[in-house]
Image (cartoon, rainbow, N blue to C red; front, side, top):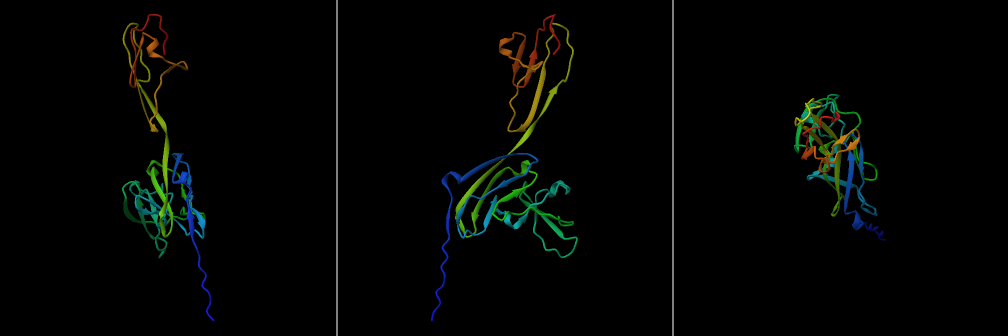
Length: 217
């Protein structure tokens, strides 16, 4: 008497509107990328970035490591307490090793196949893909964007000019996305095109021909 073998059918699906997922997170926060591939008996989820299979890595919080080692800590055999730790640097796509203690709490992948990224930096900006193991023809793409609060520098911070003498203020701002600049005086936005005493070119504000009764600002 022959036993009947059980045939397991794996049927996977991905909603068309989820083929591309765009996530935005502020620098320093944590984020979770979830794979939307569904199906009966779905195999484990595989994550990739720049052709590298992330499931082979243990993402670590390695802020205390040297700058050149910042990235993701690879899985390593725990032969002793001072395990040799190898780091794949996402910024330079290379691997370097260091004889250091292995981190205690690696960030891994959730039971649902989600990818966890702690303390997001600009290094994590980019494209990630996920697929069910053995079914790479069905792929979901995640675009991760990172917002960086603007850092603003105005120079000179203050200056004194005689009435009628031209003056200028420069403003420089860095951030992601690129900040848009506007000038305010006493909390009110300046409108150079309606003020004959102001000229605005790019990030340079020029109050010129200051009236004798002009207020400081």
